[in-house]
Image (cartoon, rainbow, N blue to C red; front, side, top):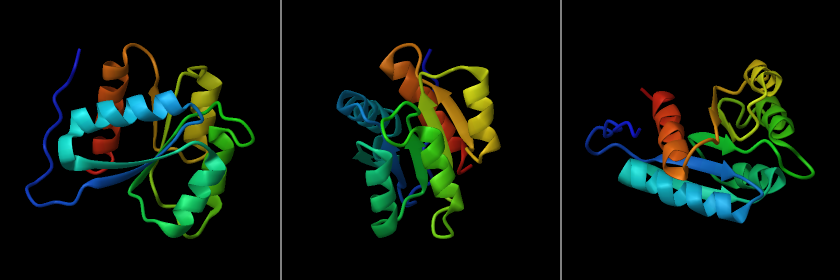
Length: 140
């Protein structure tokens, strides 16, 4: 079931999203479906690792971070902790977008400062619809 997103007010800026996932196919599929869901309301910058994301955060401004959990070298929770410890970008909302649905992972992410958790389950269209709703919910 797809839920229709309310459009942003006329003339408002797009929401800038930093999307982190070590799987290139997931980055591309998510970008395609999010753009389809949100039209011009989202601008998405995709990076393949938490380390690259931290570099991007030093040079660019983002409205929200969307991160996978299972990534090599620095997983999504370690990345979340690094983000929340930084004075520069600790206030950027963080969404954990992952197939890890174990309650302890979800609880730990929320306890460490993630604003939302979205499960990668079902079709890519369904996943990205839920992700778009979670992102939009952060700003309404």
